[in-house]
Image 1: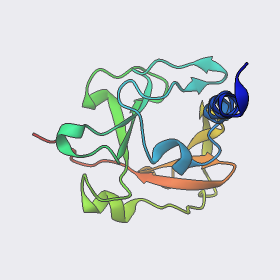
Image 2: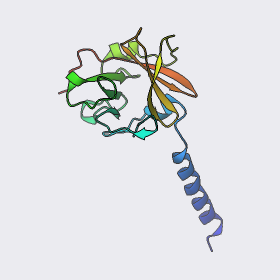
Image 3: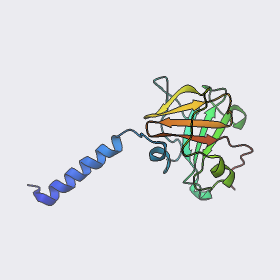
Image 4: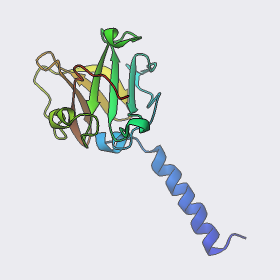
Length: 159
């Protein structure tokens, strides 16, 4: 017999398990505490995409960049990346831990450009959009809002 406390513990564990299974319906819910490599598993057109094609990972703790998220896309879109020459890197840096420029260019409440197109990439309820008129932005669109992440120009990493 479990008793009242035992039932509460079991019910709490079941509730927590349910919460973890709910889809991420906002960009902050998914990326305010981003996972380390290999990050979340994305899909493209319903098929699982490998992390060498698209990866969204938290920054390294040795740099104190854990609150930043790096979105690395194989480029041209859909290809696998092996180096910075064949990829595009976008940064979500709400706290300015990587570079204040990224924090300033990041848009928490963004509007999609008129020419934005769906890439087919999704993580839970979040879809990735790009735009020819804004090649320096990646748009993450969720039911609870849209964010614009800036392109990482001249990114060097930390020592």
